[in-house]
Structures are given as structure tokens and as C-alpha cells.
Length: 134
Image (cartoon, rainbow, N blue to C red; front, side, top):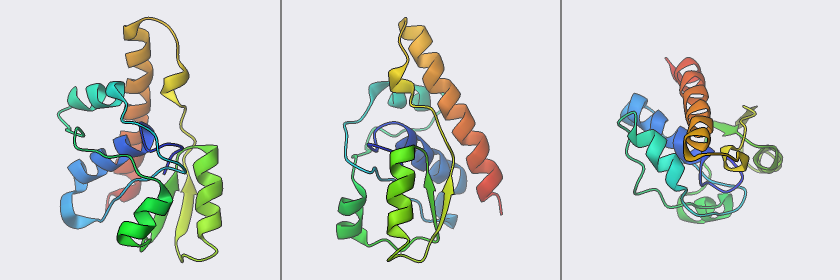
């Protein structure tokens, strides 16, 4: 879960699904819903992961569509972490906070911005592999 389900959490969802397939159930959501970020798609494409079908959704939308039957909620932003903790009042799930910078705030050349997205991607990839490896 991140702030808008537009960059960090869809990256994490796509990578978890890519590396672990159907061995785990993964869905991403945001504290609120944003728009798909093109840089996010680009840096995933660079490593052969396709997230072009991602449709941003809020936690409330995810709950309406699928329910919130999760064992673990990983929050990637302060806003999402507060939302995740609120959810544990009604959902029996563990919450982990992985503070992750928001690459959308980085300014500079296209390459500088892409490098910020790559750093987020690579950091999330390491954490996902370490945490979810059975």
C-alpha cells in the first residue's frame, strides 16, 4: 500500500507477482487513488516486468471488490502506514512499514528522474525477495 497506488505499490505488486507467481496472493492499493505513472511502467519494462494493465485503486475500492483477506499489509508511505494501522482494527493482518521515497518529487533531467524510480524499484525488489522468500 502506498499513497496513490500509482508508483510504489504497483511496482511492488508487479514484482511480487513476477517473482513468486501464484504461490502468494498479492494486491496493491493506495490510501487514495491516483493515476498510473509512466516512469513506473518504464523502469519495470527495463527489467522485463509488464505492469501496463495496472488500474490504480484505493483501499476502499479493493475492499469492495475483493474484501481485505490479507495476512500481511506492507505500507510504503506514511499516509499508507496510518491507513494500514487503522485497518487492523477490523482486519487481522500484520503490518510492516517499509519507508520508501516518492520518486515523483525528484526534479531534474529525464535520466535523473528515471534514476530515482530505478532506485525505488531496486530497493523494493531486494526487500520483496528477502521478505517473501519461503
